[in-house]
Length: 99
Length: 91
Image (cartoon, rainbow over all chains, first blue to last red; front, side, top):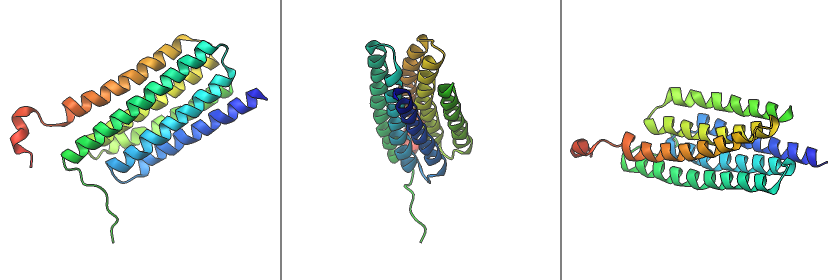
């Protein structure tokens, strides 16, 4: 039972990674790509960590994976803001719908 | 075995991300794809650490996360902006 829940959670995580990659490929400008990248991927990693935690042998391993996840979240948020700010100050135009 | 399969799927999404590196159009887009590799690489390494029972791969994942953050900061601060002597040309 635990095995199946774990596999299902990892599958959900892989789906979010897929969505993030498609977003990076398909979205029209830097800002929207940042949106796809920093949110979908970090959520996907969260699901993968959750799924792996169910099959982990000890609490130390779970704690370590949670720490890695939190580092990725903090780093992703910081990098996203830095890149967006740099794009804005160097006048990269935001995408507008053609009318 | 299932975990290795998921790791392969994630690897395919990384390869798809390479298309964005190739297309650009500006340096920030290429850097975003590198960030994507960072996050996905951490997930792949965590999956493989469990599947192949190599706990050291979790440490590698930690280093991956740290390097992706450092790369983003270094890119924004050093690589993208024109240096101080070129600043006069900025609008």
